[in-house]
Image 1 (cartoon, helix red, strand yellow):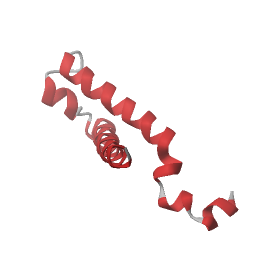
Image 2: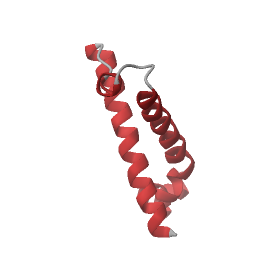
Image 3: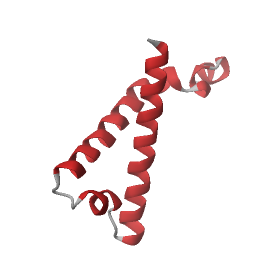
Image 4: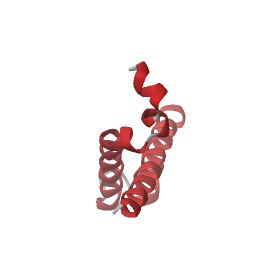
Length: 80
């Protein structure tokens, strides 16, 4: 179970990074790489990628404290 959660965390983290970099490209270059790669924003595949990125962000927020080494140390806990 722990191994599966670790793998899910890695995939989710990767998708959050991809989504963040895509938004950076949208903001700076006015280019949506996900849409470009998968046939436009309204394509089913692009929508699937957007949903997976969003779901990954929610997963990372919900599981962050248990996955984050900084948040689980005694000094970080006592500072809160």
